[in-house]
Length: 295
Image 1 (cartoon, one colour):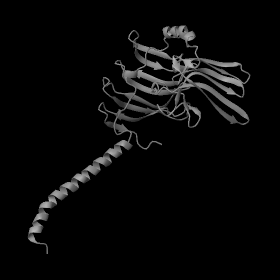
Image 2: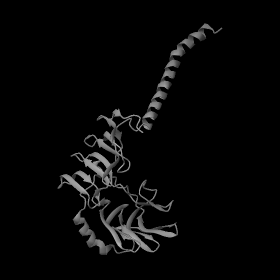
Image 3: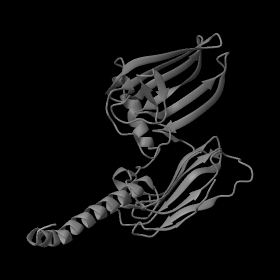
Image 4: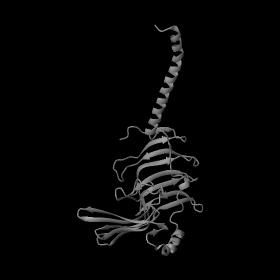
């Protein structure tokens, strides 16, 4: 038998033990809840966003800037110095069906974050010895910067210029006989045909950026609240809305909170696809609607 004194002490300890056990259980439940939230991208509408006014695009297609660049061109004639940046030369080579494919390019080791408004950022991946357009982070590769040429055997089929990973100035495409097939113009990643509207042009307060190439909407689309906080983001391909389009609440630039996400076709001209609202959040980031069982 248990002595009465010992039993009495055990009785006193039981509430403490239960409290500890309850606390541990509550802590474990909270941790599980946190893990569930992390695994659920819709658990909160608050997002970490680079698309805030600190990096809002400035006036596009600045003609004065281009004039200054032309004046400075002769001063930049030193080898491998482009747009005042010292670069290195690189190349890739592949053999496909008896033909040799070459890419000659310049790149910079400057660790610069890509412009979040530009869809395609070109960078050299030394581990794979290949040029990529997605997945760049400072330290894992090198942004293309300066002239670029792509050749099939010994014939140039594409040439252009890069500016910190973004297509810049005139780009030309040739056929196998070196006859010009296409010419396009870019300004730091933006197709020159793109249209920009402003709340106030004098202060460079942008309202909307519509990417246009070859007469069709092509690339990343942006709409801004009047205080320059991002309002809508999405993507066009061949004139069609594709992928996930996101609307954001205007929080006076304190944080980025999703308002609504609309799912469009993943590829343009997909038959029998109807866009639908995927999820909605209130201004505090609380989930108020989510479409379930979407195939």
